[in-house]
Length: 161
Image (cartoon, rainbow, N blue to C red; front, side, top):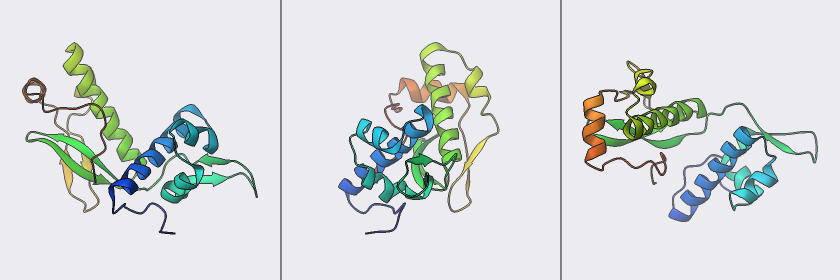
């Protein structure tokens, strides 16, 4: 078996890893145990343990698995720049959550015109695994331009491997 949290080499592995990360998120946000969350994401507990096992803790021998509060699993996400979306590999669930909150604020702005959420990200940046700081785009005119051009997709923030 390959190392836990391994970056997948094939499309099938990438899809399995994405389902494992979705299962972990479901466990954290809904408080579900591993088996129930894996079933909801149409994957197996074994697959989840393979890809995100370091973010799980077991309640004693043979006990249930529960998620840790955060993890250091690398994820490649889309981050919005003035040139459009850019894939960035982050090194923790906290950074991934920050990117998710940013995308939610951008989507809310483009749908309703409410820029309060986007303003919270002014002067903020995401640090990739190489240490490069990537500023989050908060220029409302640029967001309007990118949104009107149809360059933004809110289906998933995860970049395809």
